[in-house]
Image 1: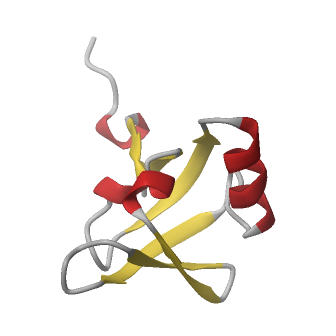
Image 2 (image 1 turned 120 degrees about the vertical axis):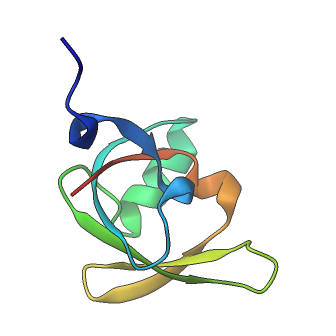
Length: 83
């Protein structure tokens, strides 16, 4: 049986621009998870990639009504599920 593609987890930095996803889990060191959590990145929250810098890093995400820019190294610690 093939898994449902919508249930596949992938890092937030792989989310295409103008696409939305739901945060499934945070990974990485505890201090990184705490920092992301304090910015509003927590499981069950919707996030949309709204753009990126000319060089592709950082990328901007709309989360809880705020636009937050994250470096790729940080956004790799956020696992999402496409909606």
